[in-house]
Amino acid sequence: MPHLFALLLLAAALPLAAQKYTGTPPPKADIPYLKHASDLIEPEVAKAVEDKKGNQITYIIEGASSPVETPLASPIFILRADKLIPDRLELYKLEVKSGRRQITFAPKKGPPSIRISTTRFAADNIWQIEVEESLEPGEYSLTPQESNQTFCFKVR
Picture 1 (cartoon, helix red, strand yellow):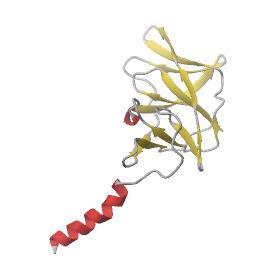
Picture 2 (picture 1 turned 120 degrees about the vertical axis):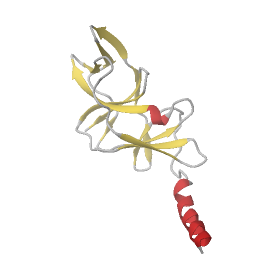
Picture 3 (picture 1 turned 180 degrees about the vertical axis):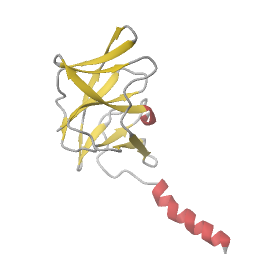
Picture 4 (picture 1 turned 90 degrees about the vertical axis):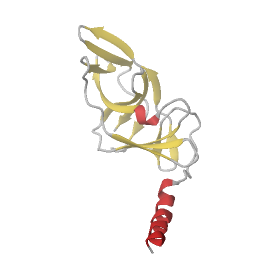
């Protein structure tokens, strides 16, 4: 009887572990697309420029606002991973100063990233990235750790 119970538990867990992505596949690899119903919206892809002053580093993205907007306070992203490691992505709120977006880090410490979770779909290299808290209106960047690559968007 215990073996039967274990088999039933395993059978119940398999559909969760083997979840298949059924939506539109992302057209480009390594870009986390905003999911709006059944549509995928490409974020603003940019490189942040480092500006070191004293013991602080400011990462600057040109332009006061991203052209990519979402009305969703807790957006979901869909990513087809090739070289990008989804578990190494971080989400930050950006400040707008002097007509550009930026974020400043002190040595070994910076603003905390916003919590996100990643889920891999079975047999696809497609991932879902979910923001775990409500975002205030403003400018945001999803970025790989230790990289100046940014995927920017605005929450309305």
